[in-house]
Image (cartoon, rainbow, N blue to C red):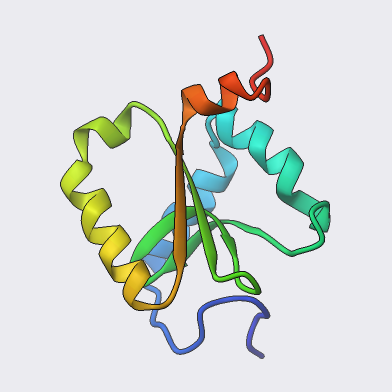
Length: 113
């Protein structure tokens, strides 16, 4: 039975699925805080966390809005080429990406001290 709100027709390896599960268990503090705001349809739309799309694991994904939300921490400074490639692939699928640095969450008062 297909699962709702997942990119249809994609093949996901067991290793990639396992990695997504690990990332859901070990979210960063910023991801945890943002997830509390996105989960349970609080914004009127359904978000998934650590969703595999076209071989990439995105932080948050809303199928209805075709929206990917990335919380960019320090690791993204080291993988700018990979992030650009991910953005290009997701855009080709018709998805919009909102990548916000961890500091932006802090500026918005979302980060707890």
